[in-house]
Image (tube, rainbow, N blue to C red):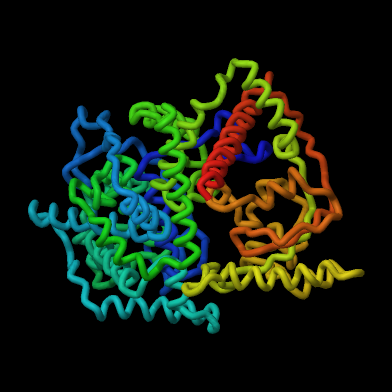
Length: 575
């Protein structure tokens, strides 16, 4: 959970979390994938002025604590507001169940969200029908879905005729069937909440779901549509407004008011998800996601589960494993650090720390914080000695040093999708290539710059029109940058640090000399060689004793560093 000191939000900007927010952020990624891959980001009125199809931008919605209600838009009773949606109760399951769940919540995390939303939407349809409330035409036929797919195919090919549409879909974590199911669900929801006939809009429900936003702008747009209908005219809602704001807010309401449990909340053997009291079976979900799992993703998931089993078993034997109550108290305290800030807890975990799902992070969090009790007390001489030791070893990170490094990256991922190949072991083939490059680099008078240009798989630039002001990879001649910024170019994060043998950024910053060539080193991108050309000392003055933020960052980084070393020792001991 290391974080660059200079990019750390000040204390009054620290971030917040709950299950609803986590699912929403992952949902946004799916929503973007479903609505093409680029688009106009200029704000527009809800009523479209011309025919347009626009991709939404990622945005955040601040949510309050979960309120469990019988239906999505029913008003909660006052006494229900303070009740937690889920009470954690640990349940031991078989190693086989642990492994399958690990695959589901890493490789299949996107489907888990898709399935959760589908279950919640079906419950809302049933609730409306039982209460004789407008539902809309939710019986989606195949022709409707085919038309939606063709619309997206045309848009993608118009942007880049060389792209394989279905390859892009698979790269987003879908099979053909799960993609069609996703489109079906989206069409159902739009017809329920925003039918073409504005007189059939569920106004009271929309006002509750959208809150002040309904009053501020959508209410007037709705009236405009009603006036147009009275004149015999019609106009569709603006696609960007629909995709970027309206539907995500509706989904957020469904999630917020539902009851969702995942394994870390305590689910029995054979159950990987529980939605509104309904169990979703592990075997059923695995059968659906299994075709999406690549060999590398399977290895990573198995590595995570193996590490977690070793750590949890050892910590339990030695009396360090957190109780359910201790775990929830510690997790709530971490979430509170992010309350009222621009960075939600879920965004930090999923985007910055790189965990594939919050469920995977919750398991890691519990083991990491359980290990904390095995360390010396913070007010002890032993702990002070550990602080002195880690500041000496990793001071270049805490003081925000920067390096300029060249990297020859030999990639294992698709250059068009960023995914690992679905068949075979790409790392084995990549290592053969790396050994060949290593032999060339070892030759007398080898020209590093020429070899980099000949072999490095880094592109010259990445991104679209908005990337002109961003740091670029320049084929591997990376710009001067801090450790955490560099980790972005290397695709390293806390999750990969936990499951892979080592961190190349760590080696660069903490154990490398300027001008020396290192490699090949296994990374999340493939195998790499590197050479540091320049080091710039940071201006940050670290004061553990007097600066509370410095102490927090150093304590947190030390816990992560020592926990990962502890788990690696357990792995080495059983080899």
